[in-house]
Length: 165
Image (cartoon, rainbow, N blue to C red; front, side):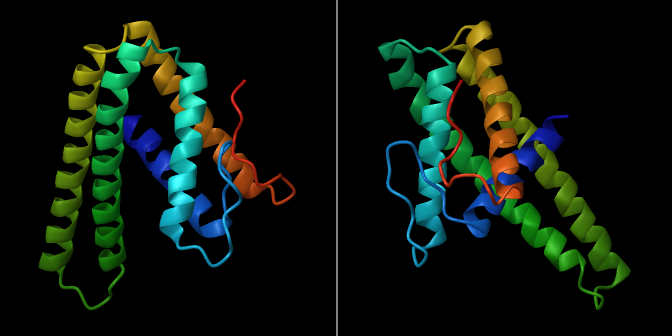
């Protein structure tokens, strides 16, 4: 289930970055010529605002939580990028069976790294947040992903990113 959530969240980020410009609650609408990194930053800002509204953090918790969370997101993004490259390479018809087997083994290793990252992050975040806040965090991440996917799928939506309830 974590792998599915991980894949959906990553896909949502990519779809939004490629499909159309995003707007964070506190940032202006992205320009059409703006590089994807700018749109991704806006998406990250919107995610942070969304999570902040859902998980009530003390000032001390916030100072300890966000650096670790941002590090986790960056590592997860790197692992996703590597997995995408492996899947793209697997479509190459000229690969031998041995190369395909190696590709699968590398993908299994990446999935294990993703799981290890999730477990490590869970252990680290418990030292900063209560278990109830951790549960709220995971729910907020799922809700944000659902909302982003819904807005990408529905072109009649406004360009604003999800607003918290």
